Length: 434
Image (cartoon, rainbow, N blue to C red; front, top):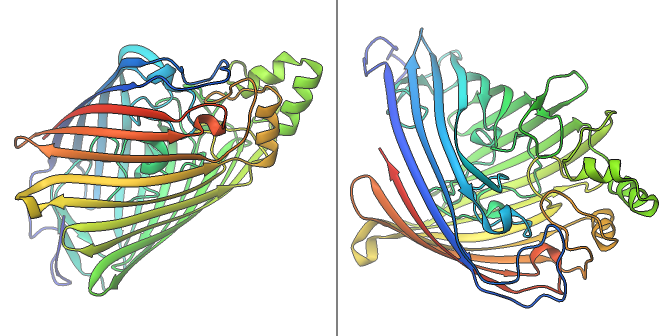
């Protein structure tokens, strides 16, 4: 939350606590009903009933103000559990808290550790930002350059949306809380190392970043080499429609890594080149650089009335090179609504409904049709159709710090395959935050 207090104000006039402490715990249990499938492969969603796939994450968010305009943030995290079919078989994967970690015992790690510096621009006013997750309460210039450097999730800074961003409190499906066609660089848990520079003005912002990419597809270690890197540029514009707030964000990305093309994958299938196939599936490291992936995204949020908001995302990547970090989507379009419970006297409850349609490039399609596998999907064959998902949830705030959510997803053509599905997916989510 931010309150503008005027250009005459300085950082020394307000003295909130220099520390920020927050905590979250999220547990999600998912199941799906059995469905028809003419065949299954190594990366297929199981066609039999699957009950009780459970994930658990808990995070401590620590922040400390340093010198003027600077703060450091550290997020120790515990993550464990498993997703349905080891989080495979659906490109728009079903649980954002099982982020490419199929089945693991709970492990402790540092999710984020970064330094942030605000640099005021000339003739700026200041706003008081309150103490929140990874935000120390302080005065911040409304016109500024902000530099963040260290370990973080690149999606912390890009592709934001107040109605659909966080699988711990909103939609669970990967391609609804994020732009599924953005193969954004991250390790298996969603984090990377790098720097983000933001030029922020009261009505618009411009962001540019350079971060590390994984050494191997879907890998826990990152590549630190001048030949392997990823850059992202985003322009954000805030506006009013019928006096209601809205925001549009346009994103462009370019990533350079050791990935192969799907054409390489087709040749590997024809010659039984297991090394190249293992590279694509994230089993071994490639020996050469040369992979390039370019992508575009548009993200819009708009308040319709006091308690209802609309959002949409669309994304595209060139689809030539194999998926390396996020998920196997080359084109995506999503639309949705978020509704507060004020009309039924539950103002802190939120329900949402959204749909997303995902697609893949012709080269990607041919690779899967010929029996190829990525690290997310692959049925051994493919009768191609767009993957379409509808998700709805109701999040009830039961106490000051506890939310309970019921969630349902309906998936047609899982893994882009008309020969499998549709699938009914059910989830129960408990979330604690303070």
